[in-house]
Image 1 (spheres, rainbow, N blue to C red):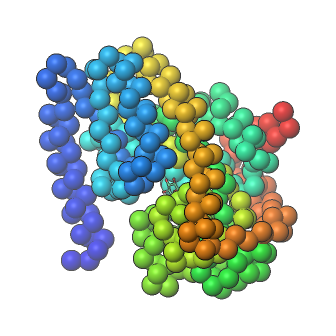
Image 2: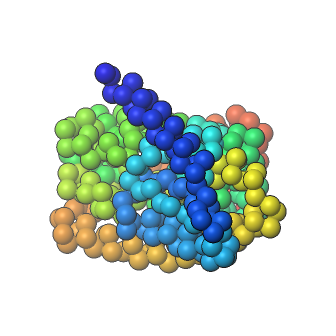
Image 3: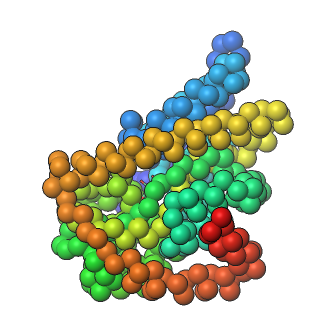
Length: 335
Ligand code: GCU
């Protein structure tokens, strides 16, 4: 059986199993078990954040809701997980803003290279009412975005050489997420984009299917990609967020008071995570250098930034709502 077909059959089985689980998800004593799918290993900062979220929800709901976490893509990749949440088989799906582009293109704007001046700018944007509005605008598409988990700056890591300037990317196959902006970015920089799921990156690097990838430092180290790709070049091209999405069937079943409880728990989780992330970035950088002997390359960011500028104008010209969001983001640059 071809891998794609096999995956479909497996997914269908998970789906029907999930339906059975969901039908039987009420515990004795009226607790409901909610299912959350993500693609990181147990103990990775994102997993810790979701555990915290589960704790807050259980406490705030006085035991009415318990969240069961399925890590390591056990329930499928990001897209498949969101589909499960959309259809009500599970309630929560972790999905990066890159992959969300396939569900609503407004997310492309948040992922444009160098759209944020720095970390503070990124936080101002993500904490704004405008973003909350966008997060809740996809209900008719079957889900809303509840929590954003900051993913730091993403940079390029490679096997054959460091990437000081875009010309160093010439001829290199770089893995990206299934995201039109990431594909366009690598093409503009002169590399060849290859779309793969997160779980496929390690083997693809090892087997030479790709020459590199791009991600934040904790993902580079905790997945052991740094064992194979020794150069981590500080291009810091995007600041993507991981999103915890809630499926519409579950969201629509909640009272207004409960919806507010989930929103409040989301805010608490975001604050809790910010500190955790900073520590994790520092720890992973030390591990990359000291344990794995990675070379950290200082890239000439201005060269990358200049090549990416046309992307901002091109996207602004595509739809008025894109231009409005780009203008809004730029207006928060110097607060
Ligand atoms: C980060 C992010 C994941 C995402 C991954 C990727 O690790 O936290 O949610 O899947 O990047 O590049 O696929």
